[in-house]
Image 1 (cartoon, rainbow, N blue to C red):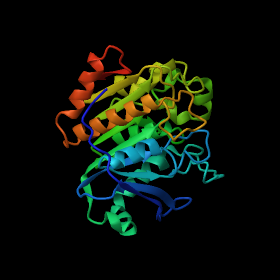
Image 2: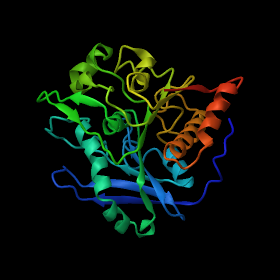
Image 3: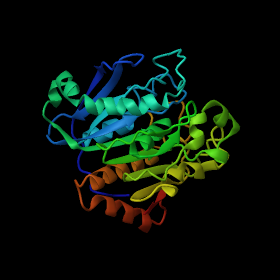
Image 4: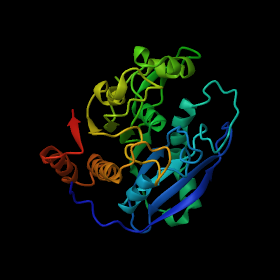
Length: 313
C-alpha cells in the first residue's frame, strides 16, 4: 500500500521528563520524542497498555510508533502511568491495579504543564502547536484515550457518573481498545475490574480512528471475541473510522516494541500498516493534509489482497 508520507526526518528523544503532581503517588515521568527541526509541531499524547512485560508498559515502550510519528513531524509524549510494572506500586487505592482515572488525569496534567515540559526540554521551546493535540493508546491505553474522548462510566465505588472528557484533545486513536461492559465481559473482568462493567461510548463524540485485529479474541477479558474491540466504533457517534486488520491479534503485529516476546502475531508488514494509516489519519483530522487519508483508504479498497479494511461514519 503506497501513500505519500514523506521522507523520515531525524528526531530526538528525552527521558525521563518529570512533572511533580500533587497527590500522585509518585512523580509523573515521561518520554518526549520530537523532530529535531521544525515549528508548530502537533502533539500526540500516548497511553501505554497494561501488558505483561516489565518495561513496555511505561515511557520505554512503543518505539515503533513513537519514533515513526516523530520522524514525520509530531511530538510524542509518553507518560508512565501508575499501573506500570516499572513502579511496582503496592497501593490500597480503590482504582488499583489499573488506575483508570489516574491514567486520564495524567494526560490532563501534561496539557496543563506544557510550559514545564518545554522548559525541561529546551530544544522544544516555542515549537509546539497546542491547538493540535491528539490522544492515542493501546489496550488499556485505548480505554484511557476513550475516556478523554468522551466515553463515560459509573464509578463502581460511589455510583457517580464519570466524565473525563478533555476538550483540548481534537481527535483520538484507539488501538485494540476494550469494548462495552455488561454481559460482554468475562467473569474474570467483571470480578476484578468492575469499572469496565458500565463503559458507555454513546457520548464519545470526538473524532477517532479505532484499530482492531480480527483475531484479537482477548478471551480473559470478553466473551464476545474480536468484535469486542470494534465497540468504540460501533457504539459511538461519528465522525469515526474503523481499521480492521486481517489476521492481527492484540499486538497488532508488534507495535509495543521491536522484537518483543509478548507479541503473538509478529508482522513487520502489519506494523507498517498501522504506522502509515495512523499518520495519514492524524494529518487528515488535524487539517494538515487533504489527500493522504482518502488515498490510503482507496488503496486498501482497491487492493487485490488487502491487509485490512476501513469503515467510516
